[in-house]
Image (cartoon, rainbow, N blue to C red; front, side, top):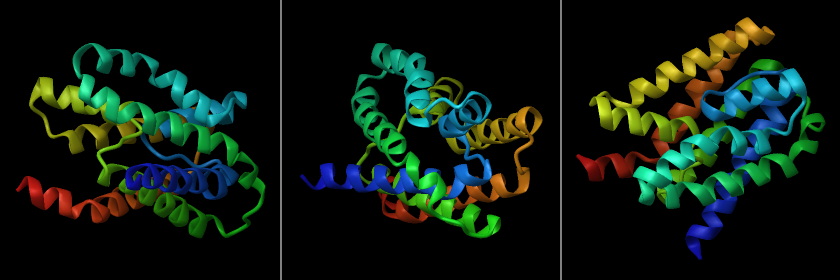
Length: 190
């Protein structure tokens, strides 16, 4: 029951960060969220639904080769995507300066992802792909995620002209909060 509550709370925090702070200023996060936001800004599609659709090939790969990861990620993907789409009306409720919005967006998204990770739940997506690549190539997963996030931000800058610096602040804020919430997990691994 505790895990279910934390998945709901983490997914809600993630949805608030995206809808209340990131989308109003057309900023980006990294990973599958960032790709889905690019699609939203270009064509207006729902962010959560786009995350699910773009994640399908990765989840097929997980189903075939990494079933435990598939099971731990699927409900995180579905619940967080659902919350992202039902919280879409928050896009117009909060009016803060853009820098504060970027920082708070990163903090809320990082809090959501951090809570999910504490219970071995992920939203999957490109982080899941990075885990596969890291296992196959013996490269640090954090480095792979950093490269993927940087490519997404540069792509967003080139295609739709997002603010690269503020979107970078979001990615950094997400990383810091997620890391701080999961220090106990890292200590167990050491």
